[in-house]
Each structure stands twice: as C-alpha cells, then as structure tokens.
Length: 143
Length: 143
DNA sequence: CTGTATCCCCGATGATACTG
DNA sequence: CAGTATCATCGGGGATACAG
Image (cartoon, rainbow over all chains, first blue to last red; front, top):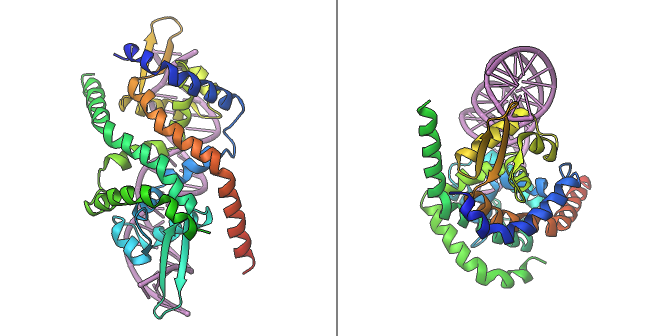
C-alpha cells in the first residue's frame, strides 16, 4: 500500500530529501532557525492567536474571548513572545481605562501562508490519521 | 512600517481571515484536527524524524545517529506515534540480531510539503525574527 | 541491534488573587 | 480594561540500567 505510492512522490522527495540530508549532516540541531520557529509554532497558543488575528486587529479581551479558553496569563505571555519575534504589533491607546489592540505585522501575515497550508493538510488528511490510529490500536488490542 | 504592508496582504488575508473567523466561532478548540496535528508537529522530534526520512528509509540506529542527540527512548516513542498516525511504516526483518527500518508512508510524504513550506519560511525569515528580537530586547533594556 | 523499564527533573501551563 | 504576581500541577523528556 505504501510502496506503490512512492513513485508519485519520488520527484518531490528527491529534492527535499537531498536538502534535508545536507541539513542533517551539517549538524543543524543546535540553535537552528527551524527549531526556533517550530518551538513557537508548537506551543499551545501561538497558532490560535495568529489565526484569530488573521482578519483584523483585536483587543486583549476580544482575543481572550475568541481564542477558546486561554488564560489571561498565557494570552499575555504568548502575545509578548509573538511581539518580540516581530509577528504581532501592540498598540496602546491612552484612554481610561486603557485600550490595547494587537495586529499582525507583515512578518506575521507572511507566516500565515505556510501555516494555512499546514492547517489545510491537517483538515484534508485528518480522516486518514483517524483511520490509521484506529487500525493501529485494534492491532495492538489483538495482542 | 506595518500599515503600508497591509494592503499587500489584504486579498489573501481577507479569505483566510473569514475562514478563521468562522473557525473560531465554531468552537474549534476542543479535539480539533488542527490542534491534533499541531501537537505532533510541535513536539521536539517529529519534524526532525520526518525530514530525516524524506530521502530514504532508515534503520533505528541510523535515525539515532542522523537526528542530533535524540535519546533511544524518545526516538522509539516518537516513531511509535508517527507510526500510529500512519505517517511512518515500520518493517522488521527477522535476522539476528534484529533489523528494523522505518520509511515514510504516502501520508508521511504528503505532510512534508506543507512542512517544507513552513521550514522554508523559517529559513527565509529568520533574520527578520532575530532583528525584531534584538530591537525588542534593547528597548526593554532601556527601561 | 533494537528496544523497554524506571526514576527524576524542569519548564510549560493553569488557577487565583491582586493592581494601575 | 489589561494586565502582573504567586503558587501548584502535570507531563515531556533526559539518564541510566536492563532485555530479547
């Protein structure tokens, strides 16, 4: 089932494979751009916040509401990280009580493209994953 | 600097934004395909293993060597997860001592595409991120 | 060679209370 | 409204020893 498909991907994987081979041989693992980005993408809230800001700037309380069940603590912390990395811009309006909004920077918008591709893959292939899990678990159960 | 760029991304972000707005409103947060995938992508080793297998199947010991400084424990554990999700196929050859190799399935190869896009973004934009961090940290230091 | 079994530690996250 | 401070928890992941 797997073997027949390898041909389909040979062309793409050839290039990609060579790239990653060189990459691994170079000892990429330490302080590598990719791990750096992946660590951020990988945390529990960054992607959710970035996508929540995709359409328009939002205020702190709006984000707190729109992103499901994130604590104020983690919202603040994640926003700071995103701001520090130049993905999000924070604007304070000196009203009372204070008004603050967050918007994606150009860099923030740009990461949404590869991110959207990945999210698209997740949505498109999630059924396959679920099926694979089921098969795997039942096989394990048989033992 | 940010505002001027928004126009460039308006067209793309409009659609993407609407998608994510609907997505957030739908209460996506719980057992959502995307969090599911992101959790795996986000862990410390999955992407490294996936890319290490991009070119060709590898044996356990080869993976242990090629992926920088992963413990046997985590290698086994991560490979099991990837196998369970149908991204990696495990083949045992009944020799003595045992020989085992791991290869990407079609599903595994397919995730490499969006993943490669993200990695490409990381490599292309890492300098911008580093610059942003520097600026942010110095600004904080000034306080 | 290819793992499994244990123990342990630390950082990420949550809960709660407080502040300008 | 928009945070900060503090404490408690929980699980990911490393180290090490053992096993088929």
